[in-house]
View: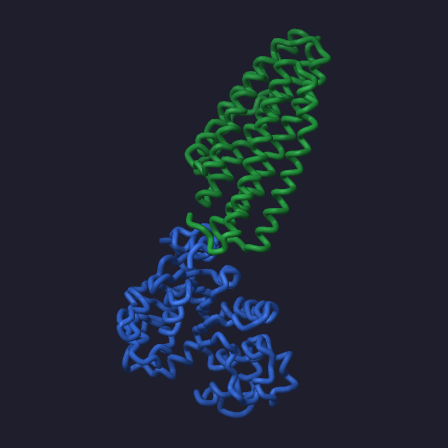
Length: 259
Length: 231
């Protein structure tokens, strides 16, 4: 396996992580550190477990019936699966952006304001306005929607909707942002904007992205982890993985040789 | 490595290797003919070498545009990426080798106007050494033979020391008999061309190492002292 020393300390750390859906084991004994201040890409064929791993980080798998987890997964050293842990708080710290943009059927403003409001992050309307504007700005969307904040979020184009969802995730001050194929429904220009955004966000957030586009993984991430049949096959610097991977399976996958 | 899911991609990659192999074969033949024209003082053969160089240049352009097309359409990764980048690089090296062979042939035409010199034999021996090096590196390319490539990489030193001997020999000849300066100078340039071809063969070895392993060969590249630096 590649030797890779992350720049920062591990933000998220998995040790011997197993995940089962009923009788089926989806992840086998995963050891993986996600460094802060970096973008980590998870790649692998469909069903390899990369999305399962992603969904463990904010306990989205709790929602799947029959899902069981063993081993440890920590955020800043604290066990994510600790019974005493408040899942709502966890999901505020670990935001998520999905494959299909899923804005609430509410105004653009309300989409972003919803999270801060329920988490009590703003004392008054002025503070809430500031959070909304800031988040839209960070998501690179403000200039495009400033004059139409009361219009429905669903009236935006697909790329704008996805950036709205990113603004919504940012609004609650997360530390980690999980992205599950965030560009698969977007055209190349909208994709480029989201990729540019990911690059800007990585200074302030730890980002984990699942993608089926090798080129996207190569462009946006500093570290890449390759999963196959529920196992972590190889993890390393993105440059090494895409120019000179250690494992034949990785080589086979990224060059389009199995499936 | 097993086959790609998209079969035509495999065909394209082997087509690319095939073009390199063909170019290499042509450069080998050009070098052989150039040395033969020197040994036999054969004007016709020398002309043929000069005329044939354009074909190698043409193939070099074909490799370039085919490789660029592959890069654009397949967005290659890892081993495939190295395969294509290496082909671009190696075709450039072979094109230069072809140029040197053609330059030798041009000088043979001049030498053939001058009285024969016994000193040509030493230059031809140097050429034969380089020929063997070129043959081995091209075989290594076709067979993806890493050990053979490393062997070629290490043997460049022999070429350099043989070149230095030829250089001193020709210099002595010119000092002793100024009447041979014209012929000896052309032979000297031919010898230098041989030494350069050896360097290009070494470059191909390095590129092949990169193609196969993704790294450059370890350690300092073996390097003799250039005679120019001694004078």
